[in-house]
Image 1 (cartoon, rainbow, N blue to C red):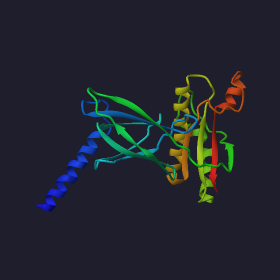
Image 2 (tube, one colour):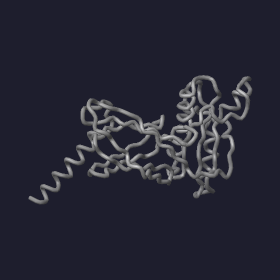
Image 3 (tube, rainbow, N blue to C red):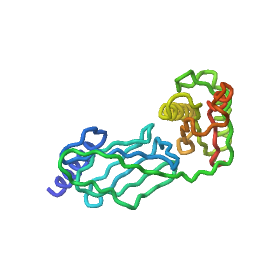
Image 4 (cartoon, rainbow, N blue to C red):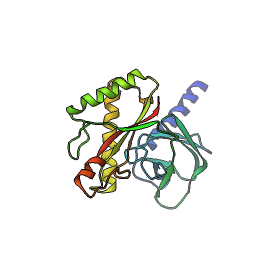
Length: 235
């Protein structure tokens, strides 16, 4: 009976935790919390892993931030949680517990978390001849030569870690540019992973229009700002 009882408790805990993830509607007893993870410049940290551990409950939950740096979770009201975030080999533990108040009616709110990756770039260079169609993030076939050169470099230097940084001009909204640049950076990372490079060596980040290298007042300047960079973190 003891073994059966232990398994039953585990299953209840598992099913309860699973039920909380990916839900969008708060209830009388469950608050909808949207976690938003950014760097200190407000740029979303897609792929950051957020973990919540109950302070006064056995509940634990884990999820991955989306392209906007967001992750939604239903949590029981009247409980406290410890938050930690993990990204690219670094752990961020937030000492202040997250308190979910008990209130009348359904509640939802956003919890903003800012993290700073300790990344000092040894070198930054433009990844020339990497092409995308307008308003698209799928790599064009003409990009293969440039990507194969980068792939060769990564294979020749097995300790090298890099960030692929996506940039746009200032045409369109800030949110649009952030999403487009992130998706383009993700596409390069996906290509490298598909060709044998470990995810532990790769970081993708979209900067949108926040880091121009030229004026956006001319087409030439806009063209320079629409770029993909390789930022070497470790060699």
